[in-house]
Length: 226
Ligand code: ADP
Image 1 (cartoon, rainbow, N blue to C red):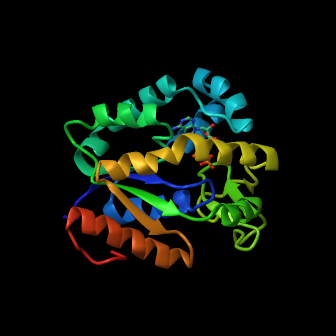
Image 2: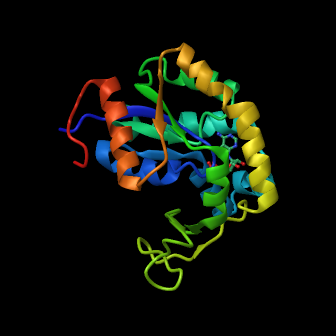
Image 3: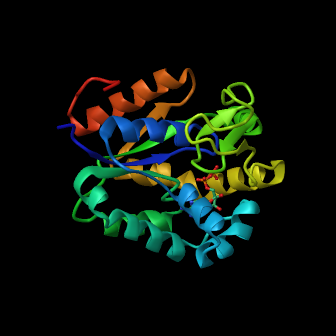
């Protein structure tokens, strides 16, 4: 049986976390827990959480820590996460969230925290080109669109620019990343959990680097691509 993994992926907006997390989730057979996707699903459903989160997200702000911590704690308490693990994408984003995650994972600690590193000037270009399926969240770009007329190859949903990928909201999110999330890189390095992986280059190459970094941490060493 393929061993699972408990991972956090950090990285700037547009570093490729969404795309790579889907691949890692298939590789390690663990759920991809994306707080952005969970919030977007809540917005679509029109739930109370969705109504509260929508304005904050469109503005490029952060949903309050206590709300996010409850959502993630509930998700990680589910059977699949407890038995196989998870890949956390978009959480933690603040030191407060990282501290809370430490408590939630006290019994089953993280294997690794990966910083998927891509420079700010590169992500700005990538986000401007990014297009996303409004149903399943699959990422595309104007240079690599879906096969048919902005219809998602995976689920048939509508592919378009995200509501919060406006220039102003992107600037605000990158600013918040610098101030609130980048300090987590040092925070996890001090706790000896951090692996920095270069996020530049072909998607397959980045996946191989990520798998190598995770395997080195978990000392499992099974071959990439399986
Ligand atoms: P990005 O990384 O491009 O900003 P995400 O899909 O991860 O996109 O998140 C979209 C939005 O959802 C964020 O801008 C923020 O408003 C909200 N969000 C997601 N995760 C968190 C979190 N852990 N804490 C606070 N807000 C969050």
